[in-house]
Image (cartoon, rainbow, N blue to C red):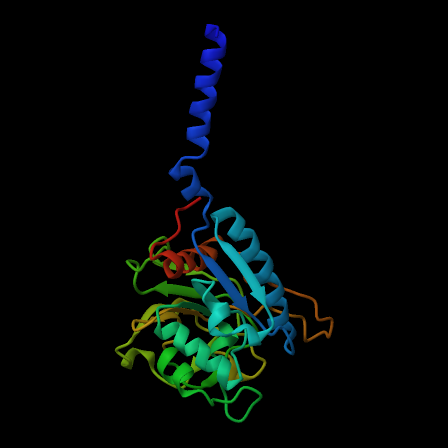
Length: 283
């Protein structure tokens, strides 16, 4: 065999080892798998957000190398289906069937992870979504029932209360959000030792909301918008309501949730903390 052929074989062997080394396999394996549940009905602002979120998460999954699946079939909320995923996301509502609720509670109590947005925490009795799930609203999320909201959707300045947490470590002390409908809750989360508030509305945001009703404009008060329950791997984020032109009855989308790089960093780092225990590597 001549020298050229020997060198060619050596080069091919080296290339094979390089391409199929354990390191290369590790790089091809996704960081984690996330499954998002959504309903996507009724309020056009929530439907707009759900469509936007599914597109944004799918694109972000490709960029950051994790798996993102989504479904509007809540019957998939069962032990066998959930066992395939490290993170569950509720984009808008919550499960209603007792067996679905039981499966989710067991998933979380056995080390599963959850990220919930905006309406996923909503509960109001009487309404289409009454407070009839004490574990979820009172213990897990900890906020109890919905009390009121700002209107119309407006941007707010958020103050990060814990910049050492993996989900907030890449954030500035304060940052401006995209427009949102902000919720006020029944329970004072500051009094719950299990709740760690990560971000709240900064006083420079006031007045917050434009009305037309006076009670829809907040002038003072303390309003947490991002928090975790220390007993679980979970993160609730109050954002998730796009602005829609209801006033002129055009139903035109006037704002989108994922148009802020800083706010998006919170979601990405929060997701990676839930899925891997660490924030994402900045790209």
